[in-house]
Picture 1 (cartoon, rainbow, N blue to C red):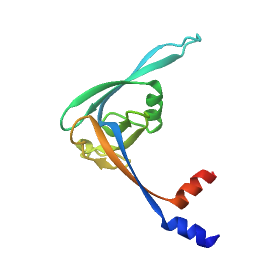
Picture 2 (picture 1 turned 90 degrees about the horizontal axis):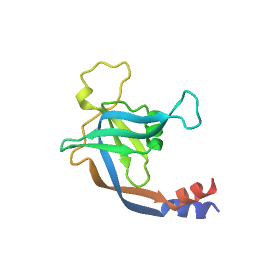
Picture 3 (picture 1 turned 180 degrees about the horizontal axis):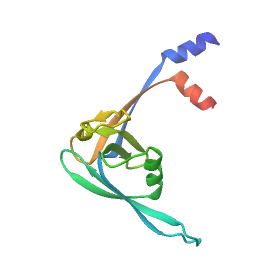
Picture 4 (picture 1 turned 60 degrees about the vertical axis):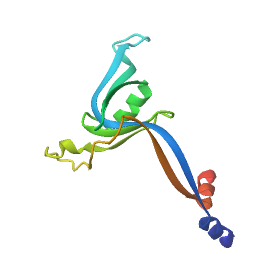
Length: 140
């Protein structure tokens, strides 16, 4: 049993994946709201307009309300560098743009450079996974 586990830890798999992503510094986040169809005083977000800027250009995207919710969970504000996967809609906050590094903030954010290239790009992601890692993920 122990020998088998150590053998599976020694065998690794390298997974290369090409993902389409939107990456850049946030210039605007504007939710499009309409009155709640169920009535009441609340408003429902139907879409969100996000402006992204890189060194090469700028683009405004109209995205689903689920992406707006995930951006709120990560506390994304104007000036943050984010990336959004086009296929799955997963969004990540990379850090604060280094243009804002001169501002004094109580929270020591990680300052990252503004991404190079276009806003919409293909990124190659390489993951190294052992067979033991796969076994542990399937056991959960």
